[in-house]
Length: 317
Ligand code: XMP
Image 1 (cartoon, protein in one colour):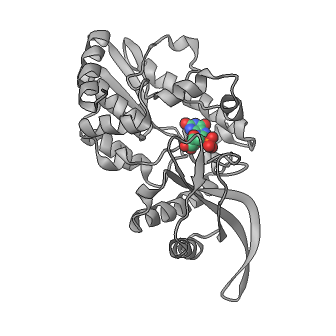
Image 2: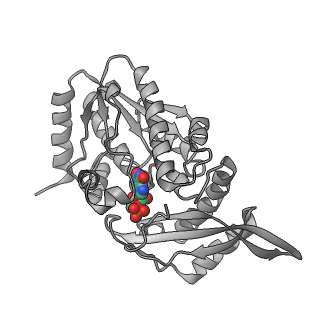
Image 3: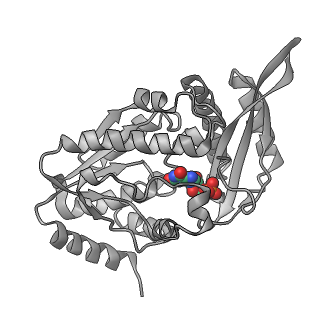
């Protein structure tokens, strides 16, 4: 029978055998998978693992600084790269969801390629790919691959010429969390909701601007903070907010307003392939909605997404 303890032991010894004294580079996202994968590789080869964490300007509020700090606390050899401007200019003028994903994927590869060339004699690329990612990207003919191009699997340019090491590619998410627990990784990282690689770019419908990102970060922080405060965070599989390309009329004091609409999305799911909208308490939704409208300039209406997957997807883009 599979146990996390046995997996950790076997994985570290096989990584040691496979990697020897080679150098490995890994891009970390702050998510469960890449963090657990990096920790395993770190246990196996120590300072020969070089980690990179990119600020693409599309992360949650304060997430870049917080995540970088936790990685440093964990003893990982991590370099933070501020590439916000590069990503914003790559996204400039784009509103099609797939065009945005492709632009982000390309910008990421450019940054990563540049950074990995700074590491002398690196031989391997480590990735936090888990089993369901393998399935999704292998079934190229299946609907999921053509509905949305998940940019975090494959698609690397030849010139990188790195061998790939994916210590989690046989595991499901719940197993990854158990492995992370065995490795004593911070529970807030292990319990973190999934977050898409393209980040807030696919939650801002239409064109991306730094101003829209700032608005969405504030709204998202209120929603996620509220879920934590009401002890609902762990009850949902994933939650986030969409900034809609729609303005609506409102009234604030005796002023007429004409501002943006946001849609809150929270789902329950096992693996993200199917999902139900989370039946969050009305009192919670009322508090969060008031907080958002009172505190975030530029938003005067909040709606709650009650669509399940299928036929709706979790993200709106
Ligand atoms: P959908 O929206 O297809 O999302 O129901 C299923 C899960 O995948 C995440 N997602 C992505 N993750 N790159 C990623 O790394 C992407 O382009 C991407 N698109 C969706 C989504 O957040 C959900 O967890």
